[in-house]
Length: 410
Image 1: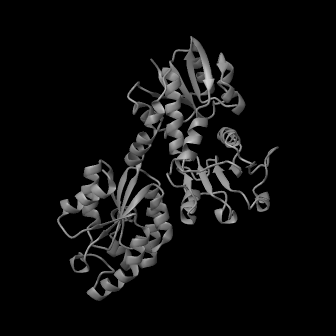
Image 2: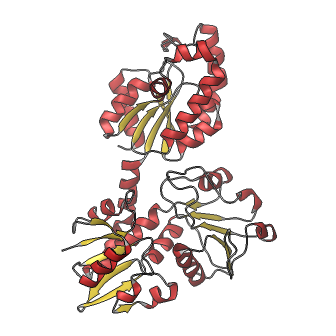
Image 3: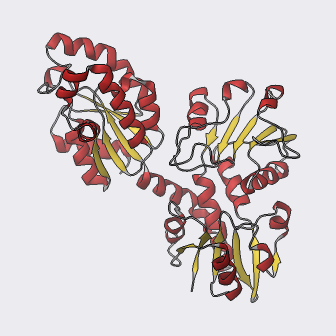
């Protein structure tokens, strides 16, 4: 039996992981050009397929039937057999609504703004309309027929729900966003269908403003389990959604350790990486390798600002990757852009250790107890501001590592 995903480029797809978490079948990633795709669909030598960019419309002529939902949306992302005939449907619709529901975002009576006019935009507008949106606006850079320009958004500051269906901000081009949520004071919900990174710039701003929000990971999982129900002719598989989302996020997330120089971030990080099976990265060592010099040498030769710029570059490079335990330098919290970059894919833990027990050897800014105390008074509010968890590092290494494991739920 063959189950899988067909598309042009599938290098970063999580679909195989998600489907195989159901434990019902093996699932393949099938990268194909258009001629290969057509030949494969015509052969019908498969049991069920998901379809992604750029073939969600191209597969429609090869189906014996498409569901009313897929026809209304104009996009097929799931192919399955029923009574020997090939059907096409759209399970992105269920996935999108599951993501909205998981963030308690309602469309009833709301003015909705959708960024982008591609296939996912078609799904989002159908779902929002079915759930009672009072008005739906589509905005694009090119201003196609039926869409408004980004410049025209100044006339729609009363938008209440914002949905990003564009790739802006997705890996590896992290950090972009098309709009400023501050321009929409009535906004009560933000959906960004991107799931890599977990928190795009748009979603980070939503979190800062206290606006309910979700990324695309719940959508990705729920559309997959809905497809599996079609493949197998069963119901009830969507009850696995929450479990799969949680497991996938835990496997992929970064854990970022912050705290004073000498508090044991690197030591604890190695121990935690061993426990979780994640890769360990020491940000200071990463900078040294990139620069070909030690931290004290960098400070002595170029000064602190030069080092901080290297640190920011390192935070942006490491923060966009996944499945890591990252031990930061003690001053990484001094620049908000560092913490934003590191937080996009992970949780931040403050390792707190008494000042008189901090290691000071080879640390350019920890030259005296007075300097250390002054540094601590400046940085403590920042450690507390940026961390989701705090662990007291008073005991042995294994004791602190166990605290970390427990706090993080591993």
